[in-house]
Amino acid sequence: MNPVSWLSVVGVIVFLVGLMVSIGLHEIGHLVPAKLFGVKVTQYMVGFGPTMWSRRRGDTEYGIKWLPLGGYIRMIGMLPPRPTDAPGKVRSVSTGPWQGLIENARDVALEEVRPGDENRVFYRKPWWQKVIIMSGGPAMNFVLAFILFGVVLMGFGIPTQKTEIASIPQCVKTAAEYEKNPECTAADKPSPASAAGLRPGDVIVSVAGRPATSWDAATRAIRDHGAGPIAIGVRRAGQDLTVNASLIAQDRESLDEPGKIEKGVGYLGVSPKIVIEQQSFGAVAAHMGDLTSATAASLLRFPEKMVGVWHAAFSGDERDRNGPIGVIGVSRIGGEIAAAAIPLENKIVVFINLLAGFNLAIGLFNLIPLLPLDGGHIAGGLWEGLKRGFARVARRPAPGHVDIAKALPLTYAIAFLMIIMAGLLMYADLVNPVRLSG
Figure 1 (cartoon, rainbow, N blue to C red):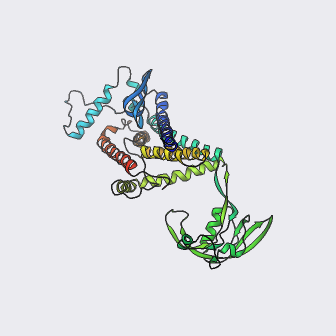
Figure 2: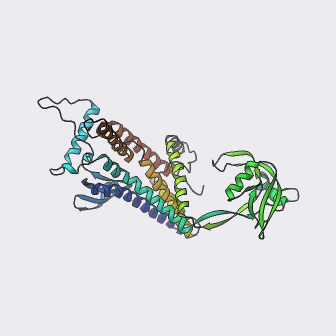
Figure 3: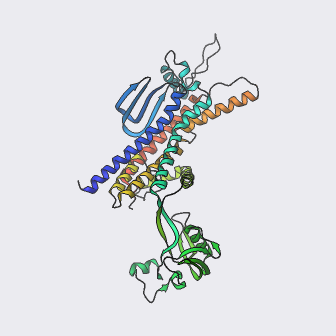
């Protein structure tokens, strides 16, 4: 096996371990508050399938399973018992398939409750404790994501575009002309920046009279201006001066929507100086907020994205780099990063960023208010709290616990759909994986 192949294998293993640690910490986010609130937890498992290793401490069996596709903790009494019938009456039980499924699930849940465990069941805990227990997993993912992004931004630093000009193309060429001859000739039209006399080392301080506080602000001002004369304020050798340039119109990729081409935007022809800068705590929070918004928007388009995965798996369409990806695919990307011809520090940064993004995505996905996801249980706890609060205000008897067993048919349908989607992602990751190198 050549060195690149070894690096790929090591990258897959390292990233897979990172994923499983993240999953294990997610489950700890549930385990700790559950035990603090007195819920009996019989199992804490990382992975699914047959058990690779386990050890029992107190009431809980801690272990690792062979399939690294998730994890779980097992709390007793997740489902409340059926409401008792009035004394002296024969209990009426529906023989329909869905009702039978619900009643069987109740019976299985009650089998776990031993004498003395009556106050240690999940369903009897106050609604706010249920919400905290079920929110603990996603919250742990968000904390991990923030810490990992903080390591990258505050520790390593990130490439930052300064307002100083690093380079200026001497001419303007179409893509076809550039492919034929990338060098400038006398027949080529000079770039607006070159024609205006701008120089590498100039620091842009204003565009069209407006302060340029960042390279992004300067770029947007130039693009929004369109073709025509414009005043560029620069600082050169410590002195401020104004350079008059004549922008040309070009079709260029959107700054906000990658892949979208904007017609006739202003073009000057300058490139920024890029330096590695460590960021502040506030920058980490802002970065986390931006990515959270973007990830939440992607989750809203999840069904549409899965259609794209289907076409990529069975029709050979190109995989969307911003689309859903499974454990196999993301581990494969880890191998690709490890084998890439880039400095070790850059590999570490990409690894940490990828793991942080995974935690953010898993945390948000689990907040979807559908069972069997954590968000479904959180929604049930909040609904119970709302009902009890209304009853207290209206001076009515306290209602019973929210019976999530009634939602089991929908839960099983969603779980089945999730299994199908996971299988599709696994297949697509094998036959047509997402590749960072194209």
